[in-house]
Length: 171
Image (cartoon, rainbow, N blue to C red; front, side, top):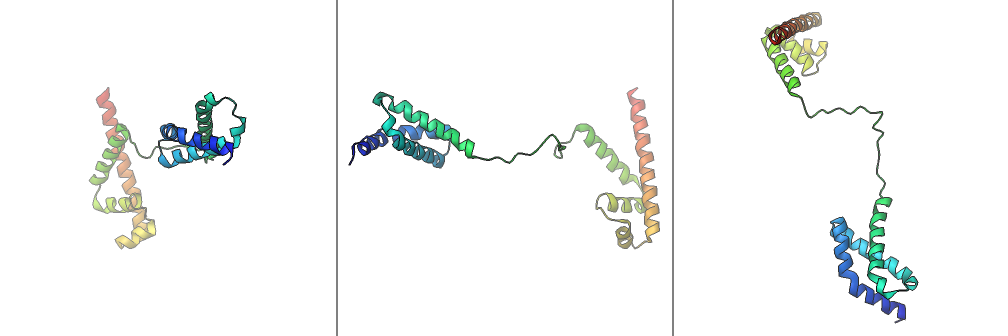
């Protein structure tokens, strides 16, 4: 064995567990920590001849390990999205006002007569077209469109009267 190999094996034997402990502390992943230690010792092997001060071995190895950990993130290519041009919509959380509004609308739809309520629900909730609603309810398409028009108007009137009552109550 050459002198360089002996020095290297001594470094690995003495510092492996300490370097692994530090690497694990940095990344909190056993596999990544093992890779970091391996890369550290590979770089140490390549640069072992440049190490002059034997007292500086531990700090030298720790510096190599820290740099290897930093390189891990340099190599990682993240996919970035241009958020400035996109509109972000929170579809999960609703405010209390929105929940109240939805409850009032549902209550008013429930108050509509069945002949108006059914076509409106089929269109709004189920996303059916006028032709599909006509087929489902076994009605003429013009009848369906008339009922949808009347249902929306009744709903609009009921909601505006509720709104007026709320404004009057708050004054």
